[in-house]
Image (cartoon, rainbow, N blue to C red; front, side, top):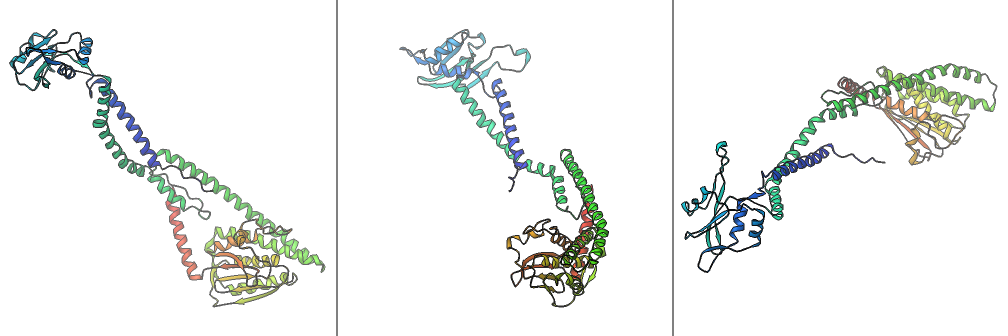
Length: 472
């Protein structure tokens, strides 16, 4: 079952950075807002606006204030409220403790749209009173209002101010932050995981035939380098275990050769009993399996010993050797040769045992009758029988170790698996299908000698380069 893919590191970082930067920005804006750096919670302009809506004229044309809700609330909240209101004709009204310095300013500065008095950064003058003067337009004409009283903003205005601060200040900054994160994060991630991408390419070159290689940690962050070192240590343990396993198989196969040979000699000395031929076949099978195990180990250790091999000559020898087993079991053997006898590059003994194993498989599963056909060409060996055949869905599984189509009292289920390993070590392939008579057909395809030599040289060069580049 396909495992679900993990989340992209790039988008995880982008999402988390956007959330973090947004929270930081909102926190900073909130502090500045509460401190009054972005919004004035108390302002003389709000006092002027409350007075503006309360101005009216009396019966004689003079100025007076009506008790509006805003003015009543202002007077209740600000006991020290003071102001001076003057119209264009010079009529005026004032209230509260107006500082003496501002009593005549409005008269001296008619027509001024707005002004601020007393605000300074000079330490010696900071204690002087401040005032705000602004010309406003009311229902009873143009008025000039001066006041030094600051009034608080209502909650609705505070909320509106908070929204405006976010839209005019926070949102543009947030857009710039998100845009910067979208551009910078992929660049940062690409640089941070550059070592991982290199290790990924190196790991793709590792297989069962290229042991001893390790992933490089150069250029990777320390957090990733520790993971790569752990993987390298795991690879080392696997290499050690594989080598121990291979040495055990080779040693076991080597130790089995002598008792199998002794067993074969003793069986050959038995009288002509019905069981004698079955015992000879069993010993031949054991001998082939043992030699194939040794072939695999030898080929893996020294593939450079390959030499030109004639498949026609090889086939004649194998058929001659297998005839004493096939005839008593009820089979005929036919050898056909097609094409030119162009040699292949390989280990002659190992290829002989691979072909012998296919013929032995036909003897075991061919139904005990008919003819086993062996077809040889310049780079192909094919064995067909007249038995029940192999189901199409099982054609690949029969090469798995210990796999059997049907339970049998004899055999190990390793023969075809070992054949595939030997053929693959020669750069070839082996596959199963149906014979013309409906039985099984097992085919070994090997490359011609010139193509094999070029492939071996290319593989050896690639392996050497990979081996050098993968060393830490």
